[in-house]
Image (cartoon, rainbow, N blue to C red; front, side, top):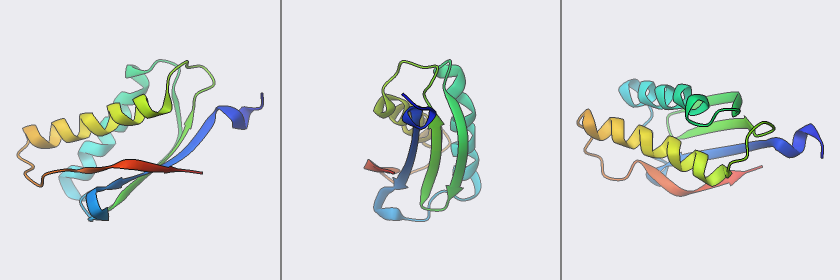
Length: 101
């Protein structure tokens, strides 16, 4: 198994690819990313880019025995929960599916 076998390059999209991840929502997405390694010890975020309609991630699972989908769902749920607590009323924030390279 090579180092690349443990890396996942994924793109998460906002609902209908709306440009929602700006200002406060972008800050909350950054906060959610910062919390991921503490929620999943051993997870390494190699690269993260937040654009208005998507989050691009390169994650290293070499030292973690966890499912990619669970990690992504945890991130999306945290950002959505923070947003709702702060008054976000835009309905769904994320698309269910994601792209993986």
